[in-house]
Image (cartoon, rainbow, N blue to C red; front, side, top):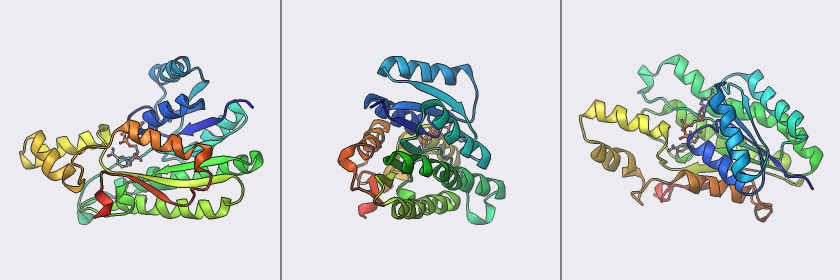
Length: 259
Ligand code: NAD
């Protein structure tokens, strides 16, 4: 059997890139994605292909745009003949109280963090059903299970994607396809780095104090989860050992949601 193919949205940095690396390590061919179209993006795909001995391409597609989301999956199927693993990872954050939350930021977060997964899944499902095997992994968050102040759009989108994951699991059960959501706690990526810098400016506190008292205060382990730990969790969900795990959430959050 030829190698299976994985599409990872938002995979040029942070968690998405680590997921792509973990899947390549298991022999999956890769479709990398972001909204940019730079030589760096193509070079990243070529580098991963050489490092892991798989095939990898970069496809530019803006996950805030419905047509782009659908075209990404079509392009992946056209290139590799299948879409076996779909990881809906692309996501953004904006932090503000509800009454001051910019409408365009709300719309953008819902589009990228939630609606994009509907579009990619809708196109991927017939392809997966046709091959009788598929894995959909949605990168939700501890904020898919718990709330925090000033993160209304993000919390709404992440709770939404947990619900969407469950429906996807029910509609695919018995077809060799699973759908699950991974719920990371805080992971030190550019998305969280921005929150640290913004909080330092807002409070005048040191980086150490912001990290300890405002970020990791929610995470009983007092440690960031690593991108590799999220990648490893997704690779497990993509394996045959996880065939009966579907419609559920897996938290990688240092105990946050045990509270
Ligand atoms: P990141 O900013 O490092 O990476 C986000 C990725 O999404 C980048 O590759 C970026 O290019 C891509 N992206 C952004 N907008 C896009 C668009 N319009 N179209 C296509 N791609 C786009 O952030 P991250 O921390 O790695 O986040 C990845 C996912 O993990 C997100 O869904 C995020 O909500 C989730 N998550 C992150 C944390 C954390 O602590 N970092 C915790 C829980 C969940």
